[in-house]
Length: 213
Image (cartoon, rainbow, N blue to C red; front, top):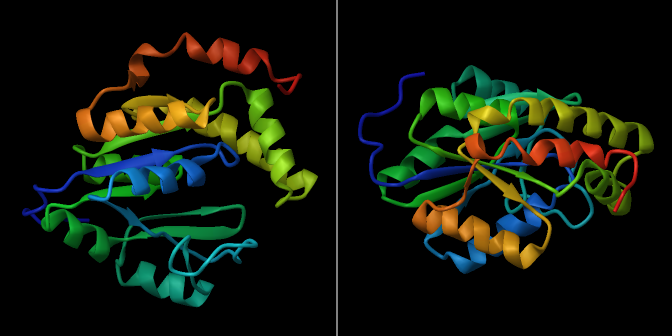
């Protein structure tokens, strides 16, 4: 995909995290704190969860419309996950960047890797809970998936973490207030925990895999 040459004013931030990490809550708080930041609402073919609103949380569309958008090259990136599809609207993001707006996109690791190839200057942030046991607890407490699906999501989380080196920063979501300050510091000042310097975090993260916090 050839990107327009005038994408130079705004900055694109990509936030990724295993399902259940608290990404949506943190994203909403960051948008409240940083009114100059705009959020790219992804398209998805999955059904809305309780409380989700079309056009705010996701653009919920049919498989047929999604495929038509793929064929029309209307996505900056897109991917399938657990039989559903997700994509980032190309025209919307590029127009905001042309306007000099900073854009926050909530993408999985495959989507983030696609953005890295297309837009090397984007800032990629990977968020994780403090331990894998805590991730399991959060997945169980939200009660939006079956036990089988929660197990698939834990497996998916391990696969996502294995691809962590494409990211610029690691954000550890333990206390929500601290996590918000971490995210704001990355977006406003480019200050955070560089992923390349955080390899010592992961042994302790996986050591708690059997006992939720």
